[in-house]
Length: 262
Image 1: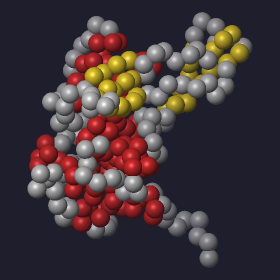
Image 2 (image 1 turned 90 degrees about the vertical axis):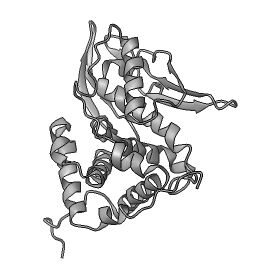
Image 3 (image 1 turned 60 degrees about the horizontal axis):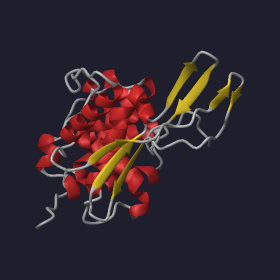
């Protein structure tokens, strides 16, 4: 009999399995002391991002270097570049072009000399949370691209695994809060509403990844809750409850880190 009050898990079995397999992959390739002793829960506070900057461009450079440092990649060489500005969709107070192609929030690339370039869309300069999330995602690309084997499901799943990798590096609050953004815009000639999403996972999926990170690191969820949007906080609480009632985290803790030169 159908029961409208039956408990529904936060994620489908397939999505949950992918998350667990990604964490197994990340712990195997990038775990050990680097994760259990050094990775932190990075929060949108002055403690983590105290710098005052004089321009949006310097904010990008400064924030990027801070994210690199927290990710443990400060010594990894790469170049940061701004993309060209997106085209303006508002061509008249009563005319807004729909479905205009926009530049990605960020990109990661390596040339034939293995020189790494990360780019960012200038639109993120007005959104500090999105800026940190974007940089964390692209730096996760840099890190996970060095894995000894492809992510679960193959390299076609790399973007999804990269987002989970950014949570694994400690930036889960930023990724989750950037998953969906609904806001009003107003300028001299027009106003309306805009939606935007950062990353490749849903709010529920980011929350589940963040819950795994917190439980693996033995960090109290109470440290994260005050900095989470309402939807994220609700999803995170549900994920924590589900995981604490399972053996998933204890089994993940048994995953052995394999050094690349071993």
